[in-house]
Image (cartoon, rainbow, N blue to C red; front, side):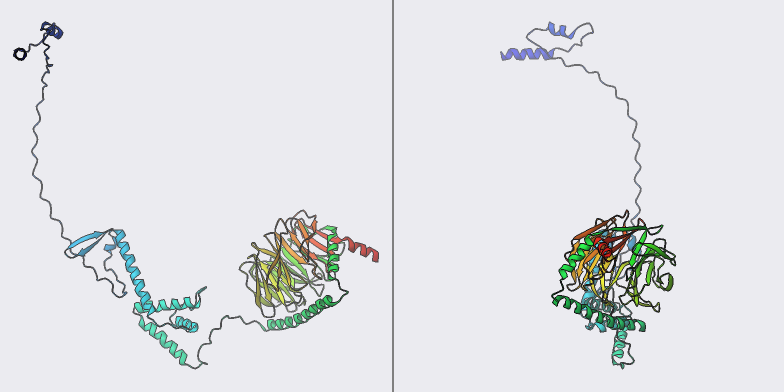
Length: 569
């Protein structure tokens, strides 16, 4: 069997492969073969014609390269030693983005970031060496000696907010820097000057600075302080004696009196309303006897009205800008006006007596001292000033507020003055010494109104935060806060006789009366059609006047007063 298979295979391989004609099908050729043998005929592929290739041009031999330039070795200065500051002689190295450093026979390049790190390290090392040098120096411990050394070195003797230890450290670093820069001559000269000043007699040395320093006032201010001291001591003694008598007298019922005053205030109603001027009104004030009412407006004119029917009497013209406030004297029928023309004027029922000039910005409020001899003005130049009425001289220019001063009030005894301003602070000043004895912090917005209570120890303030705060001067803090209005409070006034109630005026077009006992609301005076700018209370508490931007004057009176007046008539 195996022999047959080998013979068949040899026959198949021995047959030549005949090309098939076009008419003959390859299938028929395969069919003519015996069925037992199925030969596989591979397809015939015609050879492809390859085109001749172009000859490859000969490559010329490479040119010889120019030799690399030999860079001279970089000679670097030695590293700074003992805190000495090194300097570079070549500026071209700083312009390159990389620095080249020689190390032995080879060289390597460092990046810009590494160079900056190296510079920071060198700077830190220099600072460390400077601190070590400064720690080894002998620096005076006395603050006056430190100031003198700084003066001799030509440096500021003190900086803003600098304390003693900070000043001493600054002197230490200055001396260390001078020592490092080689300026020992300047340092030694300053030391010699100090020794010469210490050994010189006292009459030849400069007068030592005294801190805190003060500005010496005029002789008129000294006389005014002496007068205010005598006046206030007598008034305070009378007030204390009266309070003791009322406390010890069994016939005195203070609670009943306060209840009667609060009832009278609760019965307040609108009695008269009058057009005050062509433009909005800005201030109002009752005379001491209640027979006259003064108002001022944005026209710059002030007007006098007869009470109680508010009949116009006269017009005071003299200001060139709008009038901001008006106040009657507590001892005369004279009045003072403040204006935006930076002046205040003193009037006698129609005639101008004095003009007070000196403020650098427009005036806000004006107030009389209880003695009637002095008048105070608050201004937007961040100061308030005290003036002598008889001479028209400026006695006191008081700074202390960081922003404009708006309100001013005097204690009933005459010893204290209180100011408030746009810095949200109220300050209490002792007129006898000129010192600020209290800084009342609590309002979060500018304070516009301030008033002392006749009891001597309560102070009321009102501002743009819509609240009225009551301060106890004995405890030096606020003990009650009244959420008084829905808009800013323009002015506050205590009832001037006993302080039984408090009146606040607001830009919410109302004025409100508050109890002087627990500061609860007693009465709301509604009737104005625009913001209320000023308020004043008559001495007996029976009348309250308000002025507004609606150009009207409104007089509020209690029914009990009217009934009593009618009974008497």
